Image (cartoon, rainbow, N blue to C red; front, side, top):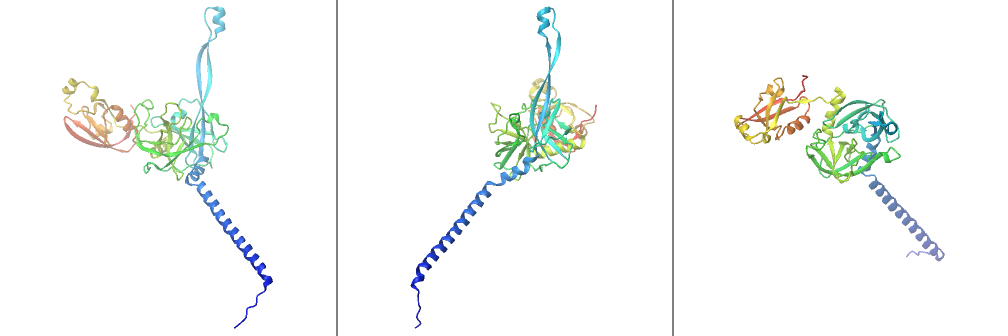
Amino acid sequence: MALIETDSMNKPRDAWQVFFTGAFLGFLVLGSLLGHAQVSIDASRKNALVTAIEKVSPAVVTINVVHIERERMVEPFFDEFWGLFGVPYERRRAVESLGSGFIFDAQGHILTNYHVLQGADQIASVVLPDGRTVDVEMAGADERTDIAVLRAKEEGLPYIPLGRSDDLMIGEWAIAIGNPFGNLMRDPQPSVSVGVISANHRRVSREVGGGDRLYQDLIQTDAAINPGNSGGPLVNAKGEVVGVNTIIFSSSGGSQGLGFAIPVDRVKRVAGEIIKYGKRRNPWFGFMGEALSKIDAYTLRQLDIRAETGVLITKIVDTSPAYQAGIRPGDVVAEINGEAVADPTDVDFINWGLFIGDPVVVSVNRNGKVLSFDFKVQEVSAP
């Protein structure tokens, strides 16, 4: 049997080696765990929303406009001392307002709302988040869809890719970026609010916008939208523009979680026409009418109108696409592209949402018979 010799003097030394080795390994494990935890925290902080905002924000601009208010005044000095008549003069006062916008292509085109620029005597400045002021010119605007396009006079500016709005999901993230109350801020960086898509294809009252704006088929979001946000982008979690922030419903003037954006699929078509033609070409059916609900029963009997609801065609242009398709005065329009029609404003709003060349199917009631006519939208003919 072999003998194993031990050195009693080495026992304490071996114990300390084991202790220090264990402690060292423990510190390594602890450091690894702490490092992993820190990486996890950093990863959770820089999530998809943060990445999307970093991607989009550099292209969001503040648009400052100036309105000149003119007041006719009478100098009270002359009236008081002469007692005969005052000396009238005009006083001018510059009133500043602001909105938001964003650069959406490499050519420097800027999207915003028409109402941001409406009535402005001058675009005072367009400012990027990095503080640069950009010279711009007007490319065109469309009041009915509330879209305007500016063109920057320089190249190499940051821009945001336009996404799509036909695949939006209720409950998905929505990011509103703009310049609410920007006149109270001392720096040009945009403000961000986050919410979800609350509803899609929302149809608000026809009276919103004075009945002159196509505020239909809108995106609803609870992301906070306040005065000054108009014209800014509504963005998804991928950093793509899905809409243009436009209106809010509020009893206080501030955000109450009811914000609405124009869907980007419509915006792209309007902007494309403005860039190409300098305007939105006006679509045209070519007929006018009156709601059956506003015509007395005697007249309806005399005209042999057997429909209960719809729009009675009273005038139609014989060169119009509707007339050429076979529609005639006395027909009662019941549906256009599957959408029920009960008032002439219904016809107008459907018309405004279409573009030159779009197909149209009109269902009419003619003496009790339901007929269908199809044609393509044409541009308004010059008188």
